[in-house]
Length: 107
Image (cartoon, rainbow, N blue to C red; front, side):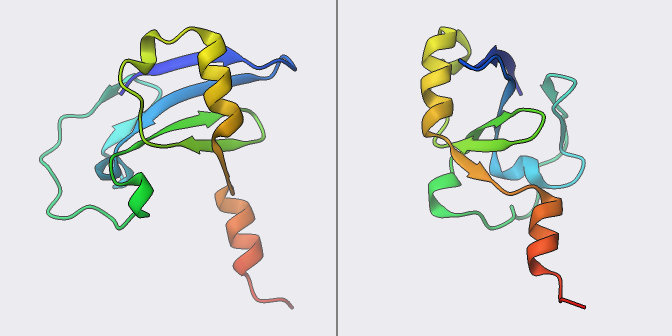
């Protein structure tokens, strides 16, 4: 797994890394290390939306996460302005806390 870091036009810092569907299995990668762990391939990968089957770029700032799919070839060598353009078109993703809050029964 590869990592990049950029700042948007507002000065917000975004970490960017690529994600493959098999990576979402617990323990298959640590984005902080910059490398995929060498684990045997899973018997099956978790189901993902068809547009994410070939992987996506994850853009994450302190308060937001977005996905851009599919992973562009050679994205690591893109200049920052191209990555900022991808960020603008990336799809916002709810955080696990937001998802849990919206799916929790009301008291």
